[in-house]
Image 1 (spheres, rainbow, N blue to C red):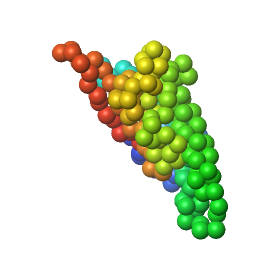
Image 2 (image 1 turned 45 degrees about the vertical axis):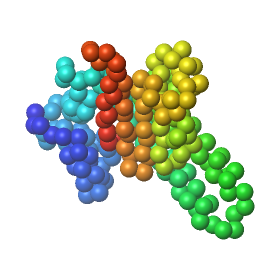
Image 3 (image 1 turned 90 degrees about the horizontal axis):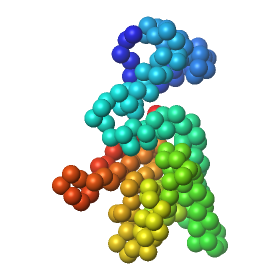
Image 4 (image 1 turned 180 degrees about the horizontal axis):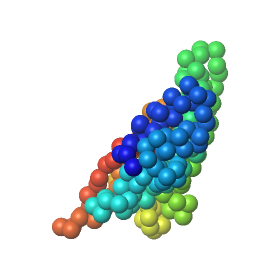
Length: 207
């Protein structure tokens, strides 16, 4: 098996679609055989392990779980992000069109819809049973959304009433979504051995 990367596979698949009209699954099978894999499934497993860091014992297990969901749900995540980008374009048109009345209300409704898409993406990444809320400073934002995740329900309830948690400082995980660039920024809060908390930030391109 050759050491081929996810970006190389995506590029070759695009070339095969343009030059030979191959659909993604067909292209993946061809790329797999050309790179000495038994088939597309084995190639995908290799790409999945590379992306998630599953086999790296030093990788944060919460991050591995999130990246695994991101890899497995990439089509749905990109679809939601595409919808959010379209909503951002709608907002821009409303803001620049002097003939439109009631701009504030129209934009608020569109941004609310974008926030719902952001919540759906977050649930795909974290799981439906976790406790999520939009971060106040990013709430209802089509171009950039921040969702705070509290792994303990009581912490969520407390945080909603804390003035110092407007930016999700007490959240276990924060997911920042950047639909236009198809990027996701993950912030993980963990307990330090010396006491207190540390935050690690990871910027990830959706595969």
